[in-house]
Image 1 (tube, each protein chain N blue to C red):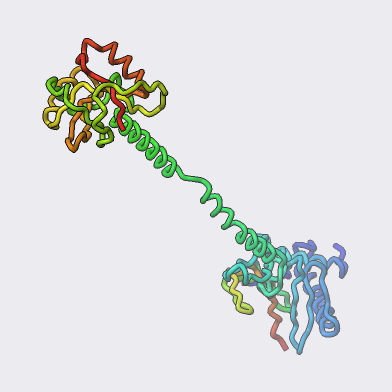
Image 2: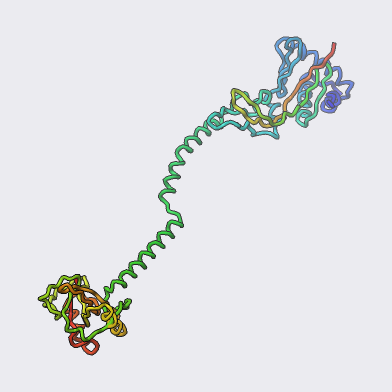
Length: 285
Length: 68
């Protein structure tokens, strides 16, 4: 329900309503006359103008801001993609025309964001490809530990460390009666002229542990195995190796692996109490 | 009490109208019309294929007096 301005003016001017009425009437008549010609502007309020026989009022920007004080700072939000965004309208500046008038703000920012967005994804992708995650690191560590363990197992299985090392003992048996038998060499590389006695000294040391001590020789694998089993309780690295001499396969019981003949000879002389007197050194091939 | 001048009347007139509109009240000016404030809620506007959500706002409305 609109309030009449008469009592309000009377209170403001501190006069009676009866005094206000003629003053207000005079002012309105003057206002309408000027509105018919060029329009009349009241400072801080707006402009009255008569257009096509109808009196109109255009509020001043000051009045528009005043009645929109609670919405100050709000602007139109674009609901379209950022690339299609157009300048937004400020309600405080153009309340009557809505969002039709442009306001310089979001469009340049949207373009800038787009540029940044185009630059960003590749950088992130590079970073992800260069930085391994914790799962990858743990997996690599586990693989490394597994390979180290497997390598240690293989080294022990091949008896590289000689008789003093802890290594699984192959089968062992001794048949002393065979000790005088012809001496076969591994993989039939020794001809008949060679004896079972130690071959000529070869002092050149190498990293390859291809020298061993033969404590027994048998034409049967079972006999050699029995002898190997006996030596296995006293030596760590006992093995049965096969070789062919004169088309006959011989099975030798060997103890230890050494890098040189002198090393094998030294052990042979130092362990006379545990080795048979006719034990000999031999180079595996 | 002296009668106020024309300038004082106009100044009082504008002040009263602004104060009333500021508080959301409509003001009726005899022989002229009614000034009021209407609220326009937030809504979606579409222009040139671009849809925007306009914020709410208040709008000053003048309704001329229908006389004669």
